[in-house]
Length: 187
Image (cartoon, rainbow, N blue to C red; front, top):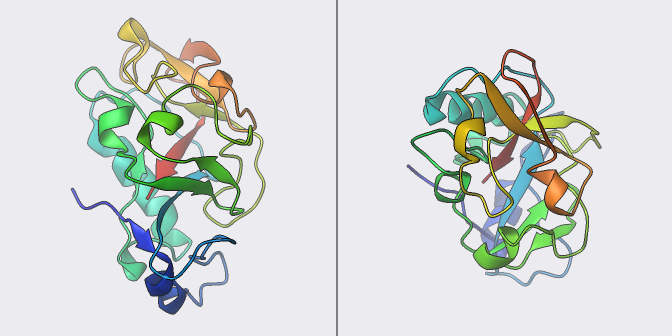
């Protein structure tokens, strides 16, 4: 599975002309610095599938519709856990991570999965860069591992809150998977 790891100098030449969103270089990065982006989808889905690929396809479709996906050579992965795949292995963090407003979320893998975002901000901007307060399916514990019987694809799963920068961003409660919530995506 291809992962998008941006280099600041390269991304500047990849900016989309889409009316919805653009790939951008967060402030403070130098040419050649690598980074990843995260967003919360603008559309809802249920969490009844136990196949991680259904969630990866969902977030990729959201990115594609916004002009920040396949047309730009960017693959997006769901920050989600099923019984077969944990979020921290599906959405691999390789470098610093920003939300779609350019706010720092984490300085790397360990920081991303320690339960709290570095600056206390949430993944609360959607694929078009619009601020969004939403419940988000994750099926995950705060360290990105599957939440036991509460992973996506079971009858009840864990969800997070997009505006939270603490552990609640990924693990805030449980709900029937037939309910429609958003998903998180990581480049």
